[in-house]
Length: 245
Image (cartoon, rainbow, N blue to C red; front, side):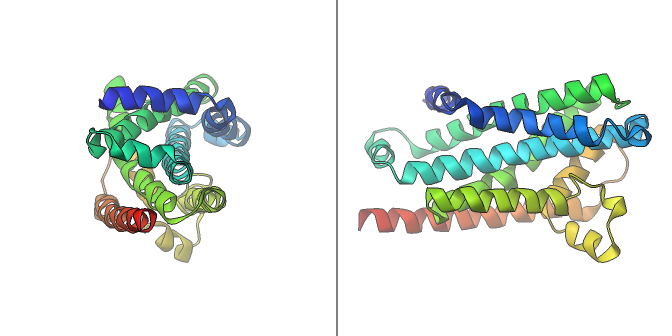
């Protein structure tokens, strides 16, 4: 049942190609236009690898926010969603299907970034480290999925579009996905450590390049996941109550 829901969820998403193209192309273009020309970064294996990782996190984050936020908010405004809830299929199947389809699109979104990084920069990592980085990306994507879920249940479709864009670019900047945190002022760097995007960046860098994993990275991912899961459940129950009163 989960695979069936995931299949039709992907088909429905692919029927709007521009949404998929934007998610897939923008991170790779950002790497091509803003990192590749900076030869001091592109020719340094450590810096280039971190730039590829940062934009891979951005690709996964934007895919998760838009996939969950817009899909849920749009479904709430259509009669089809209440009908699906009446069918004798567990709701968890739809949830897992959404995670599966979003995960597949997220994987597709990072492929162009990896290709551009591999062809035009000195980014490098052993195959096992790359695999560990992909796993870390999947784990660190959970807070973004739940943030998108909360926005989807909290706001109507038109409002959700604007809020998701603001949240996405704010998290990308504060998390050091566009500009490396080493260039941040001290106060901005401190604020950055509390964002899920910075925590995801550091977690994937640790998985891919090794080194020390700061305690605030994994604690932050756990806290954001728990808090946003609770918020999503509260908003889901509130929305369900309003719909069927």
